[in-house]
Amino acid sequence: MNGPAKEERDLSFQPVANPAPRVLTRRQIDFYNEFGYVAPFQAYTPAEAENNRAYFDDLLRKVQAARHDLDAYSVNGFHVCCRGLYDIVTHPVILDHVQDIIGPDVVCWGSHFFCKQAHDPRKVAWHQDASYWPLSPARTVTVWLAIDDADRENAAMMFLPGTHKQGHLKWRQVAKDQAVLNQEIENVEQFGQPVYDELKAGQFSLHADMLAHGSEPNRSDRRRCGLTIRYCPPIVRALNHRWASGAILCRGQEPAAHWARNPRPPGEDVSVIIHIPVKNAPKVIANLGSVTNMISQVLEPAISSHFRNAAQYIMALDLYTQRKELQDKAKEHIDAVLKVHHIDSKDTLIAD
Image (tube, rainbow, N blue to C red; front, side, top):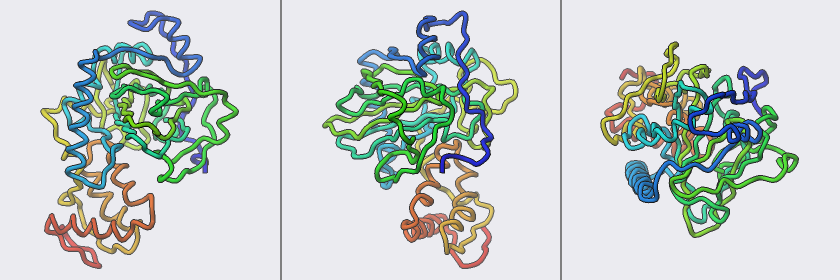
């Protein structure tokens, strides 16, 4: 299956038209329009980059201490609850470059650390970002900020230049034990030779949401971590309202107030995202005979009423929907969570 039967989204690439860029040169903007990416740029000094690395290491440690089932790719969407990450996604140097691509009104709607550990056997299959997102039109630009040095040896990201102008490319499902993401573009050989997005820690690249990209397994002894930050102009709309809930208005204005305006967090509260409270669920339906029932009747109302951004909502649901063989484990986990909150699990509808 390569997408919805009837496409509701505008997935066409709109070339950047900026007669007076702040920091990018006209040549760099032309390069972005032609090839779909532009790099490298410097946001942090080596000392500052080292601080970013230490910050991520601490964040990942806290997350995995609280949830042992989460891997190194699980720090997703924490800019709404962690001040340090909020400050990275609103860094003025980064925003100056983003503004030259999408205009003076800048919304950050997502962030995700892609941390590929040493000897990680999974690839990031060739994909187009916008293929995953219920957003329209396709006007998101992604900043890929290097937390570690990224090169060919430790599986730096690769681009297929020019594919952003090819529309929505045909893809197939790929198993999660083989790849970090579950879409893989078919017959990528037809699109020419890939280029590596090699960056030093503290540098970043910009790429269009329709550009095909991916990365190989990390066969080296070195970790390769990068922070992806998603920015769009306010004309972009979320077809699923949850995807607008984790937004920050970084610059300018958003007159329609379609996107959330999350404030700068007071501290570093990872518990806002990684725990799944059920106390706010309107009802607990404990007819847990199937994964579908667990999702629609227990997890979805609990999670959707609590999570502050769609990325984390989807990540949590993904724990229970991707593999049918996890059904029993999912039921045990749900029962344990209900017990913590003093809610009994029965075979009939029960009150809070």
